Image 1 (cartoon, rainbow, N blue to C red):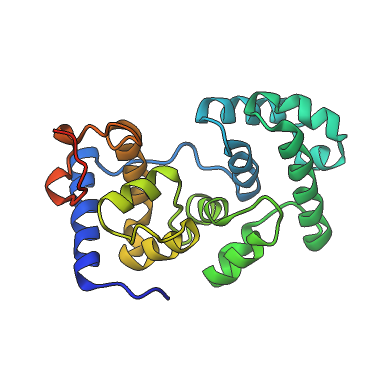
Image 2 (cartoon, rainbow, N blue to C red):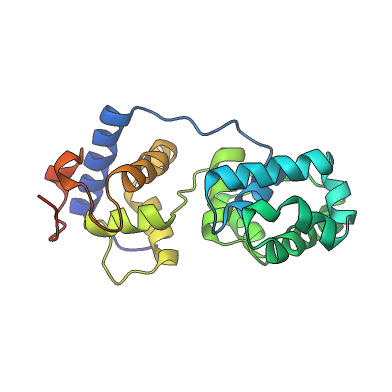
Length: 225
């Protein structure tokens, strides 16, 4: 557990409430079964959502069943997902994960993770090469309806500027911090709305501070005016 101050928790609540007021309660794209979400999230690494979805759809079109993917050759999988980038890395990785799941569980269904304590379910997913905290949290939150707060590059940047985390805190600890600061019922909307804020306004370069909905809650010293 990371020590958090009442002031930071109060600010987190204020930021998330303001974003819900402005952006509403967003919905995740069509929910996927946990294995599908796991594969999709691996495909999303170092690419954009459009190419992730194109690669996922191409993979499912070529191999309608995940058993076919785990039994396919690396070359076939790589060719199907090439549009996502880093296909030579992602293809064998996806195949290896599917085979490991099959060997350990006798199938390709991860719904059993919904019945485990969330920390155990997270640890189970993190054993796979290529599955980090963000990937595990996405599967837990959006497929299995478990309380987890995924942190991507946008949330990491925004949380630093808002003063929610120390500047020196790494990405791994920020996952834990966000779960400590926010209420579990706010994880879903909080994750999606903070990403939207980072993508549309709080850019890495030249953030558009004058039109930011949480400008008055933000202590970032290098605001644009």
